[in-house]
Image (tube, rainbow, N blue to C red; front, side, top):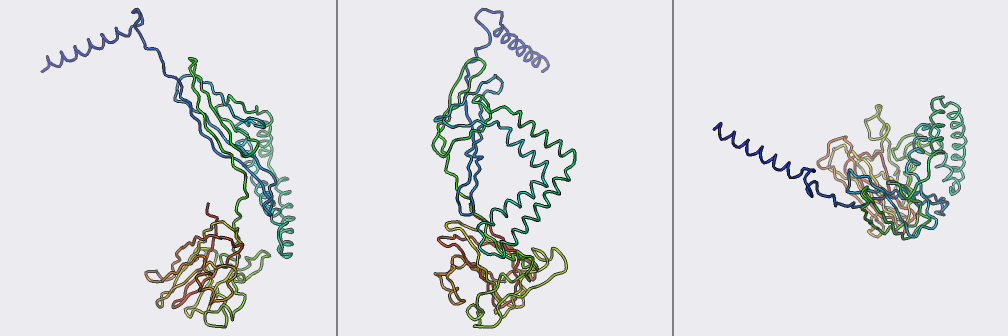
Length: 397
């Protein structure tokens, strides 16, 4: 057996020596094969555009910026990148590091930037606010925030000031982007169709080109997120710091909206002493088992948009019961009309069967605004006491 293994090793060694002699560069016309593999270019891009509209959806500004990143199959050989954009009239080339440096400044000056962001949000809303009382509160809030911003600016540390100056100096010295950059931001002059080609050349002079047609879409206003007042049924949660947690949930008419034909319809408030005992804050809305209490709130929506409303419920489990949350058209004017299919945009009925007493569970309803500029959130119950808390609404993309 040992002799056999020795022979095998000998054969393998001879084979390796023979192979080595075949690739010896000293032999005429024999050696490494010529590298005939050329580059295969590819690239990716992402939309980093920004735009600004006023509250009447009038465009104030728009930047049609796209981040492009070139690539190739060659991992070792040196490469040269050449971009071509057609048409290129008005095209702006932006160094890829510019937004990174700008974000670094925002991070270094986070307190001031955060306050300014809140000021911008309020100043955006004020011109289109029709309620004089709300407008006055927002204007006072802007004055207060500007004072806070001045204090924050004066309180910047020397380290923060130096860091902001450093980043600004880097921005000032940043070279413009070029068509030979591997990563570059193209600032297109506006919406349209553009041919973007990438030529990659390796260090042996071999090259190849790839081309894509890029469609730059017109900037459109983002759909604003509606506001649900007193969404967590907490005291002093209205825009002016007032409210008992349920003022925004009162029906226009007890007689018209009462499931029992009259009487008090506004939800009761259940209070807790420890944070975390309810999904939000310390209070939740309570609906006795008799079914005489309802929650009603009309909110503004954007026609054509789709929304998701989420909320939490808990049951007592004293007897079989259920609760219903509906999204109604704004022309619904009574409890009887809330039951009509033509007035119900979306609805969810939840039984207490299988639930655990006093444990909150999250639910969600998706609905389309259609042609409506507002909708009504309407909640009712029967058979068992239940509690409602922590409404949230988002725009579904």
